[in-house]
Image (tube, rainbow, N blue to C red; front, side, top):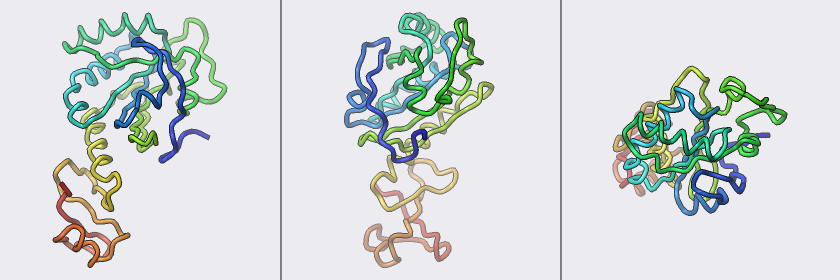
Length: 217
């Protein structure tokens, strides 16, 4: 069984281009995003890690660490980062996990448990290692997304999802479709109208089961 929402992530010790450490130590008390990739020196992945690099200020503003993963080794990661930085014009300051033995990929259910990558493997051999995991400060998985080889990730959506998770974390609210930071939120059904008004002040009753309020500060 792979990781599910609200599961605690495995506390694996990982080797990266910035040294070895445990995943729980890396998360610490921060929000964390793990981006996985099927292979170094591949075109879509280079554009994606470039996007992660150019968003460094956005991750910092949200108190969020980012860490990458690819099924190649540390030396390949270091060489690939030069290409990434040349492509995007920004430093790639985040670590990249070297997952040549697929330990992390299997633990996070990115590949079948019996996956085998042959010598001389290509990105097609590890195509399903192409996921995003958002992890809360309590080390629990809050959101995951998996993409096919042909579709580059939309990092505006990753940021939007992170904003929504941070806004709703520990709060009796939810976010509606297409919500963006600062817009109204949905009051949880666990609160009746009186309790909702006591907590949030003014609420708008759109339907008996759909009530909205200003985003809490």
